[in-house]
Image 1: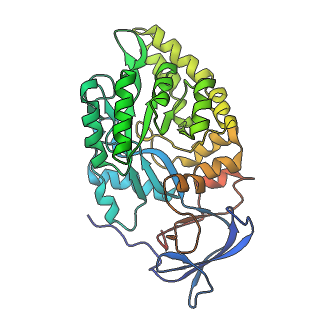
Image 2 (image 1 turned 45 degrees about the vertical axis):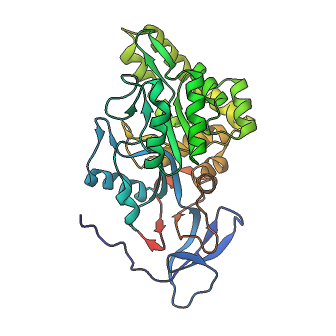
Image 3 (image 1 turned 60 degrees about the horizontal axis):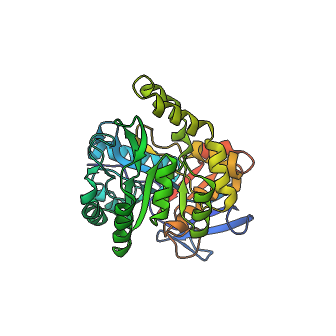
Length: 365
């Protein structure tokens, strides 16, 4: 597949902008051989001046190569990645996909991807063609399979509608989930879980998971456990806006489920806000892919800022998220992955949606 070379060609770069991490002051940044270096650097081209700089943005919950009907081809997955890049998102945490996207790692012009392998779910208890589907007695083996496909993360589907009950119920017996989490940890993987409901999230946090996706059913006791153990929460606030639609789709056949989803939606800001206040580490993820478009990190940051304030929300989509995922920020020797904005996003949050410059691996893209 052909793709255009980013411009300008590789070479020393210079930026003089306000760095929103560390100093918060106008600073000279120098780039050589794709990395941030101490300067000055002879012959560097000034590519930005008078703006505000962030480490490359992070979407901490997305799905590259996945759309509503399942995996898509390489050309479509490339468009997902390019759309994220245009939005300044240079590090993607892929929270489950049936698509093989390892080829992205060989592309210097595409964002870095941290993968969780494929979702693990029970048959007929999740979206069709998305998951590695197993019964409880196969869960540990599925964890072993997906550990080999991922980059140190496992994604479990923790709850979904049970049509025999007519409501959300846990997919896994608590002891089985605990054994699967323990096996993932033995393999050096962290485990994160899709979970909406109260019972499932309580059981899975008790089982020792490392992350919670969505988390609308968090109670004060579970929040306290997460804060104590620093279990990550990625609330996907943009995705939570779809709960009324999910409820409406199931209301006629499953009124109990519909009422539950409406209730979770109605108190979502209170629930996530209490987690933020308690000190649970919260990161920004959009759930792009599947049913949501890519490139919407600015919407997620704006929603999170309502609960946590603009600086915390920005960190959740940039420097704190990068540290959590083991990727450096704007330090000498780090890859030159950064975003230049035309105004201070703490004051004018709308500028996050339109980066002035995006630099990936030391190249303006």
